[in-house]
Image (cartoon, rainbow, N blue to C red; front, side, top):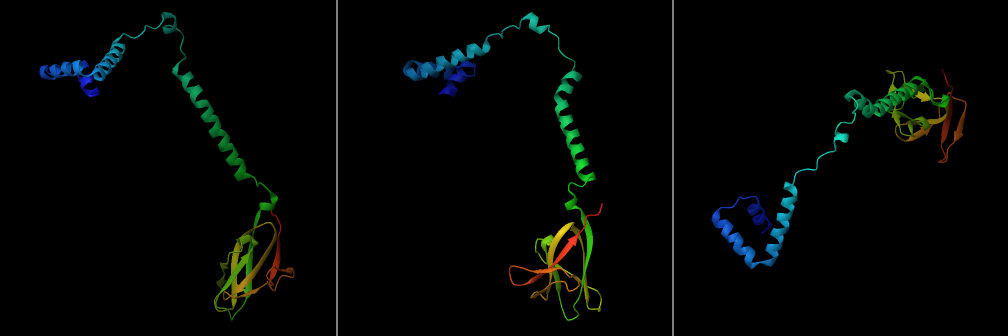
Length: 187
């Protein structure tokens, strides 16, 4: 029904449709009130807009470059600050304890088919070591953060052992033994 009222107000009905519309208005009070409400809204929409005061129309407006500067200045400052922070973060070490050094782990186990290294610097996740030809030696080169670390070798996925070439070792909570490795910070 609202659609029918809108069509009448916009003068989009033919004569027969207009006749039916008038008959509906006479017989249905709710439809009549709805149509009157829509007519009032249409009247408001067709009124001319309120004129702007001349004092407001002629006030000074900043040039476009000033407006753009005001809009983009915070964003440019934020980007510059972020870039400076990233430059500082990557150009200077954050903490001497986080400096890394390279460590070559090597063990002689000619009877092993597989040797892995686990330690505090690997999150105790096994890392496979590489066999050095047919020599019986296994090796792995890693970047290790400075500080004190614990590690062990795992032979053939079962036997765990400390590094026999390091004098410092300690018992772990599971009855095994871990080697203690101290990496010094190098600048």
